Image (tube, rainbow, N blue to C red; front, side, top):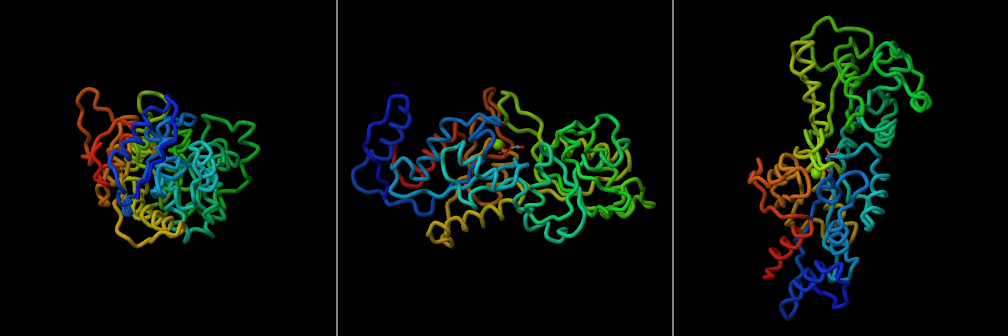
Length: 371
Ligand code: G3P
Ligand code: MG
């Protein structure tokens, strides 16, 4: 039953008053939408940039989590982001504090979270981990059980000549780990997050993919035997919404650059495995996470669900949700804009101005309430 409290709401939350009333417009109880669940993208939906949480995001998550008392019980949701670069538990704690809602262990899927299982065969093998600030992605890799995770700064500490455009900063010297890569057969490259030095990391990935047995400083005799060293990418976003009003380049743009340089220098197509939205592995993993979450809060994890994915990027959020059989709500607070009449490359179930209007529309659609 959808119960809405009649407590006073200040004028500054007038939209909430409208939203609360809309759930209260008809007399009598409305059957609780037991099958309803939400999946929220983060950048461009809940946040715009590192520090800018959208106010409507906080209101919506308070509603759905039952924090504002307007629902008789919470409506389940999880966050699915192509972002990452920080261990899952750390990011979950940070987002819980920023968004004002306590996220459970299964309520956050980052770009690399599905790699937690994928990397198991590599746990005892040396790998190169790319992306993020400092050694944060090494910590992500180690949180997934990788015992020999090296980062670009370790390689430059070993041989600065391998990338002579930027020297290690004092801070990087402090965290870079001594290693002799002439004795380390790298077995895979994991790009865990957007890299902060494209030139350096393109050079190191090319070196690693072209090395004999993964030993840096060597060249494979036969160019055709691609795949000695696996390249795994966690996010295909060419663009994403930060706190700059025009979308910024993401890991997908980095991959396009890497592909071009790889082709130009080897004549071959870049071999890689891609994770992140819109790809099936990420949505399958997210569905399992959502159902684990249902079980953790005492709800039946096996019921059929009507999941609504709220996203700002048609190429990742909408395409992935549509392919997975979820409803999709495209919002205008991120990468997508139809200011000049644009239509999205992947057709959503609906286009709404922001996440709050999107959730309002979905609840109305699921409960039959006419607003
Ligand atoms: O690096 C993050 C960016 O690619 C998009 O993140 O939350 O919009 O999937 P998100
Ligand atoms: Mg987004």
